Length: 504
Image 1: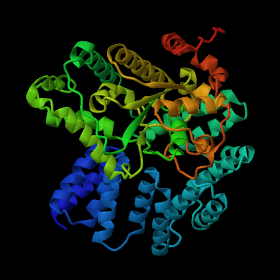
Image 2 (image 1 turned 90 degrees about the horizontal axis):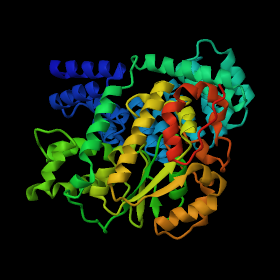
Image 3 (image 1 turned 90 degrees about the vertical axis):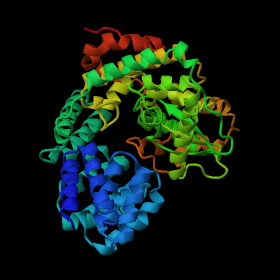
């Protein structure tokens, strides 16, 4: 192995360990240039790309590593995790079987394989594999997995007892304990665990901070450029009738977008895409095809000129080619879903590339969204999810941008309120399918019976029948939310939610 290759691989591993994913990607690319047939490089690049949520590219490099070298249990496990995140859980099982044959008793293999069975609802097999993992290691992660299985079984008190006995919980476990406290009505303890758990996770990730100034500048520039006068000058792509079309499910994290996708995925004409990165890649792609001294979005003024009007067609085809690489353009499908949180930021680009796009906007009570975002691990939104104050700040910034777009854009969309969906499921589902011009199929109301893993923190919830447990959950936390109520009230009012009373 050459010195250049060794050096690049070392830099990539160090950057990955520090969660510096862009740095890890650049170093891994340098290693690939040094030796494009090195299996370790492909395996590492596959992990980095998977962590960057470019799952199809990550899968390619992990499979290439396995082609170039004898099979490694760690590489097979990483490939299985990648496939699970793509929603292809049925393909992950054989990878775990091969990994287990290569490295019997490997903790990571057994733990991840066990988690796969839990996701698929086979708790008996999940416990069997976890027992094997516990036999070779007393690692805390094994017990934390057991906690999640107990919760899935409805054994909440037993799960809480395990967590309360465990010394020095990590951030993820503390969030889990907080969710159990919340379910059991111990709301003060729940909030404390969520605050502490998020603080631990931020430290584990290198004390990352919300990029407030970057967000403020981004929102200001998007609002300045994407106004009606400019948009009227920009071309629109034609429709590719020869292939399935995206349904953009836009909404905040924890707002019900996964639930809506699961409902649609039960329709015979719809393929579930999950959280696709393709829309977020458009801005960098446009920098290359519309080179200009001005950065995005100002460089889009290039398309006012006849020799650049084709760029919007390239935008459309880039998206569809990426969707094809994920296997989303299957024959017979009319639509595939794209539900990346905060995709509302890119709404003007969606309307340029797909002028007849179906856009489903999912709305949930903003205070419920704030509480749910605090109680779960999330990486979306410029690192806003680690503190309640930055959650409120970022959601208000995104709401302000979305309101601007709706004043300036002529973009047809269907608004679906989470609270209405859980209370009137058939009526809301029928209206949603009518908007998509699809016939009603009863399977859409039995979405919780579909054996599909939704690769989000909501994967367990969407296997349950609809319930109202999470509606107005924020009312248990009005005292903690009070400092942010003034900035959130205009948002509440605009969405038709009554402001909460001041109980101070």
